Image (cartoon, rainbow, N blue to C red; front, side, top):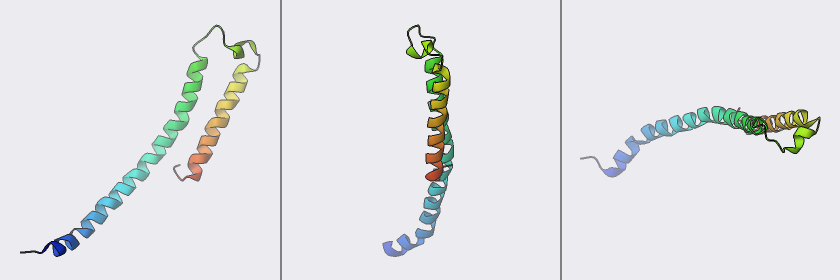
Length: 89
């Protein structure tokens, strides 16, 4: 009969494989998640401005849409920089 200590040491290589697979899969999910965060933020801002509200202050301002477009570009660029720095992209 096999003692528990010997059984424990025989499972170590198998556990290492499972942990390595989990780490690899975790790394694969970071790239789509970061792109999803970047694109969903831009989509949320664009959808708010696409609702055609009557009393939006930026609609009366001639630089409203270019300012929001630049704001979206700045935020998405910042998120891209942040995710690149964290090695997600």
